[in-house]
Structure formats: C-alpha cells, structure tokens
Image: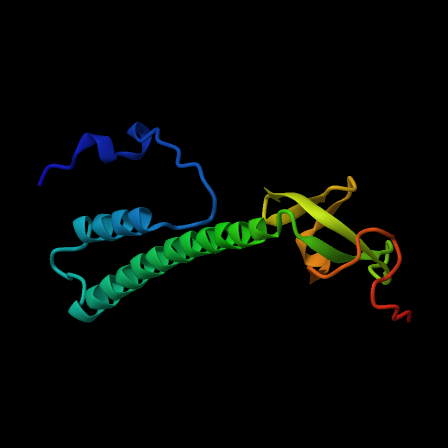
Amino acid sequence: MKIDDSLYLQNNNQVREGGNDLDKDAFLQILMTQLTNQDPLDPMDDKDFVAQMATFSQLEQITNMSSNIEGFMEQQSYSNFLQYSNLIGQAVSYGEYDDSGELVGEENGIVKSVRKEGEEIVVSLENGEEIDASQIMQIGAVDVSNEEEVNGNES
C-alpha cells in the first residue's frame, strides 16, 4: 500500500488558526480522517461509529437551533422597535433616575422620534431630552404644560 506523500509531517505546512470552537465541518473532517486511517485489521466498532454519528447529528441540530434563535431574537428586537414607533406624537411620563439608579422624580414630554441603538431603544422628546424606552411610566393623559408631577403623589 502506497502512502500519499502529502500526508508526511514535513510536507504538511498547513497551520490551522482559530479559536477553541469545533464546528460541524471540523468534526466531520476528524471523523473522516479517523475512518481513513483506521487499522484494517482492527476497524472501528459499529457502536463507536454510531455514537460518533449521533454526536455529529446533535452538533448539527444545536448549530441550526442556535441560528434560528439568533434570527428570532433579531426579529423580536425589530418588532419591539416598531411597537415603540407608535409613541410618536404621544405624551409620556418618564422617570428621572440618579447615578445609583434611584427614582428621583417624574417628567413629562411629547415623543418626537424613536431610534434603535444596538439592543436599546432611545426615545427623543420635543423638549430635547433623550430617554431609554424603559424609563417610560405612562403614555397619554399626562400634563406636558408644566414640569410638576401630574398625579400629585410624592414619595
């Protein structure tokens, strides 16, 4: 049996770069190399082969599921953005927070525009303020003519 010269160590100048992740192509390549180089007098046990194929199948399904979840999350994020666009022209009441995250007051304003910054949704108000959408406490029926709390409840 003749051995292919390209398989000799000194002729193999390929350096594989990358992370520690093993994708399905690399796994399949390892499996094919293992099958190609197995001892013909002592071949791989059928159970071992089936176990490796099952592992490969699981890897492929997990990869597909991960891809589908990423697509779903992107679509959901875009859907949330479109829902917030319904706020344009609406009066909103929003919380003002200090540096420690404590609620220190409530302000009012009319939504001028909505934009997406990464995963966050930023709401621009006609008074020049830009707030995170999560700060909105009430939509509609707020008094934007003054800067006092509308419902008069003070903590």
